[in-house]
Image (tube, rainbow, N blue to C red):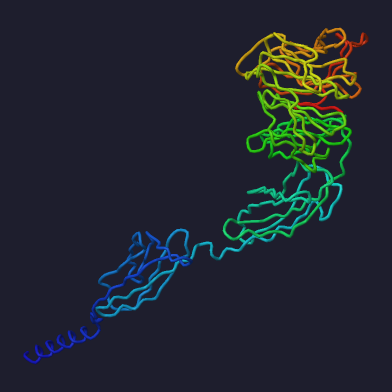
Length: 500
């Protein structure tokens, strides 16, 4: 019995010692510290998730990118760092007894492996194409290996000046380029960007626009919030001859020089310019501004031979050579009223003027000789707006407009402006707006080249509706319907006509 007890005790002692030999001995602890930063610039990354494997213990970096693990058992580990927008980074770490292990994670931006788009291929118009319309569709193609959205930029310049036009942030691979100039060579190139990598530019290509035609009509349209001058044939085939990024208006063509004079805003002042009929060779004539009441109401005039121009500057009328030299004061109003409009007779012996106060009213229309002396008084002592002066070629007639309602307001609204022709021989003004619709106004009239017709603007008198250019006969035709002036629309959504 005693021998059996000894055997049992011996077996238990052996088992205890056997179990003790299989247990992993405790070897102590150390610590892990570190920092998480951006790979490119070493900026700290806050709130990055740091995971210790195989324990899966997790900590987050502070605002300076630092993290710490305390009381980590001695051994080999893998530490990972993750943050949205960055690629996950891994580090092997060995923890030693009572020692601190420091490690730094340099995290790459998630798109660091992203590839840029291909360089755009310019498809249309073909390189060195000629006779291209003044509104042309540019077409190109590009692709992105990572299927990122491509943003395009077009860069355009021409052989007339050093101006560069940029069209940015396009998502489509086509764009209609308009308001081009005749007989001009344009250079264009396109960049493609995935907004991750640097933009990739295409090689530049070129095309030349069609030759200019001898259009007889000029007028103004609003484009991109600016007044733009257009040239048109009799059928309404028009094209812009001034840039839509610059405010240009009141075109007046001189046949002797084949130049178009016009007004343009520069440094918040209105100046007088000239250009070729196709919009090329723009030249600034004035240094003393064209100024007075309401810039859209101002007008100037050529001499018939095109060597000089006259224009208003508040209460003064100036004469200037077309090359900008020879500025001369021609006339100054005796009462300080503003000169808003002028017209110079074909023989150079007569100038018609319209003056008004600073509100546009208290109008007077009269003529002066080349020395500034007053010759005839056509309209004065009335209420309401007036304007639109044009002398006939023989100095016998003066075309103008007058608001017969005599309405006056701070907004310069006109209620019933009508066309009048003043006869210098009889001293009588004739109303030729008898076919005008009620509730509309006729403004900005000019004689046709033959002076058998009048071209003018008609618009509802509310001051906000669209404006269109009309023509009508000077004299009544008994065979015509109505009062026989053959009144009809010529160009829609257009103002300030000139017919040479």
